[in-house]
Length: 267
Ligand code: SF4
Picture 1 (cartoon, protein in one colour):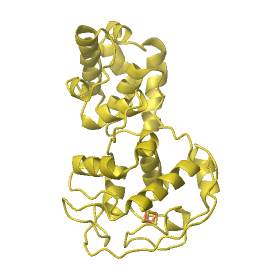
Picture 2 (cartoon, rainbow, N blue to C red; picture 1 turned 90 degrees about the horizontal axis):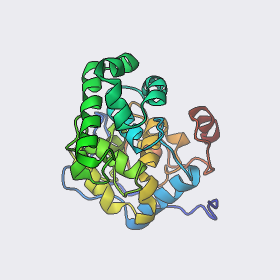
Picture 3 (cartoon, rainbow, N blue to C red; picture 1 turned 90 degrees about the vertical axis):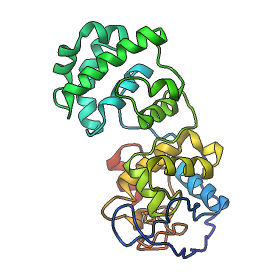
C-alpha cells in the first residue's frame, strides 16, 4: 500500500459531552450520540491505520475456522499468548470437531489447564464440537444467529469468527474497541453492541475487513487504557479526546506485526 502523499491537517473540534469509559476526564458522549467525526475524518483515520498495518493479524494461533472458534472461546479472560501456548499441542492432535470429540473432556482439560476457567471451557469445547457435528455437518456456520447458539459462543466470539475466518464485515467489540469508541467519540455507546452498531455505521466499507484488528492493536499498543500514548499515535491531529496530550501525529510508516518492532517503529 502506498505511503501518504501529503499530511493533510484536520482541525480539532471541541465537543461538549463529558464522561469516560475508563473513568478519567475524557468526554464520553451519552447513549445515542453520534460519532464526533465527519465521514472524511473517519476515512482518514482508517486510511492511516491501513498504511501502518496493511495486513493486520490477530494474535491468536489457529489453522482453520474450527480451531479459530475454539481459540476465541478459550481466550475469554485469558491472554492470547497463554491460549496459544495451550492450543499448539491441542490443535496438533485435534483440529476438527470429530477429533476434539474423540479426545474427550478430560483430555481437553489436560491441554488447557493453564487457562482460566478451564473446566468450564473444556466442557464447552466438547459440547460445541458435538453441536457442530450434529447440527452443521462438522462445519463452522457462517451465520451469527447459528454461531451464538453454540455452547460458549457469544456475539463477540461470533463476530470475530465471521470476520477473521469468513471475511464478513462484522465488528467484534472487545475492551479496547469499547474504550476507543467512547474515549475518542468515534462510536459512543453504553454497551458493546451500541459501539458495534456505531462503528458499523461510520467505518467505510473498504476498511471494514481489517477495522476490527486495527482498532484492537491501536487500543492495545497506543491508545492504552490507563494512559494513552499520544506521541506515538498517527491520528493525534484528528483525535477529539480530551485525554490526548498532543495534536502532533506520529510519523506514518508501515510497522511490523510484532509488538516489539512495532513499538520501535512507531516512536
Ligand atoms: S491522540 Fe491519544 S487519546 Fe487520541 S487516539 Fe491517539 S492515543 Fe488515543
